[in-house]
Image 1: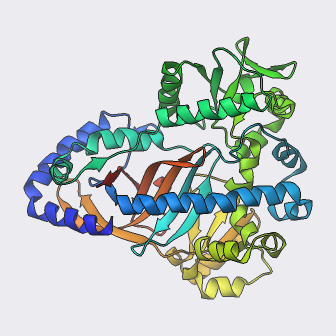
Image 2: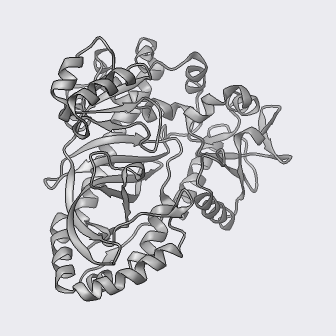
Image 3: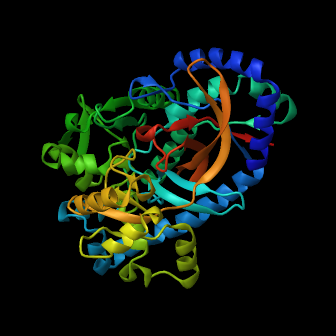
Length: 441
């Protein structure tokens, strides 16, 4: 991808006028597409992030390797009660995590984000499971950018491929449901799927595309808020119809914040007769405390030396942010650290030491100690170049920081999502951009 990136920048400089004219058309096309984030046009960069077949091979190996760690971590949590205090879940959540489920995948839906380096190595940023999203950022953006002036040129030179993110998930849901039935679940002739989330938290446009895809594939499907579900005789119902499959977009934190209001859902989870994809045990990996657990001696003793070598190479060192511990070290070496709240998402409350002076950083550390934060090794950024357009539509080539995410459905690589930015923290909350992600052969 890094070699191709240089070729793309050279092409832009050689064809400046055509690129700048095309940018105006592209900007309008993105505005008229479904590429939106929180009701506004998605911030994006003109050039896609283009990965090679070799990169994809690396990502498939990455998927295999990280799932070995993920699945073993969950087994350790389930089978060794002495490790559970490291995660610190309350008893209500722990009880939901321990409920068995009737299919193989412990984390059936994920977007695992990492920094990818030119030598093929990588460091994980976070593992998103509950509520994994951004399909509706990647898909319509690619629809537009694959046909811009520059990509038409490269399409004549290379075979360029893209990922499909909706039908591929519906197909995996069908496969998981089949496993569920084979392991004692009750079959329905035409299964009812609900896409479950609070609408104030979810991605309505994305949900609608998934709903349409489920229906085309022979399912009944509705988008349902968790507080609308009714429980009876071991099953959950929506508008009087029995729910067979829940595609859970509801983040576990949001569920626990509303635990007392969601009695019917909680009873349905405990009854264990509904195929819930994914089960609550994915929170073991989704929480920011997961990386802390992987570096905690109580947990590490259950991994082999080879597994520990992988963890140390690919998972940034992480520990709880505690007032009495190492504060001077964290301030004196502030550029080496980043702090994150244990269980927020969308990069809320994430701060990098290199963006603050020492006094401000100390104040933030001390303040965040009260809120439940982890402190983490600040990973080297993965950099390449893209075009930055000013308000008049003129561009300059700028170095951007990239973070790569893999959409993983039923433990298989099904897509790539790339974000970029100029700040230490890459997210929409920090003037970040979405990139279309393509594969060139």
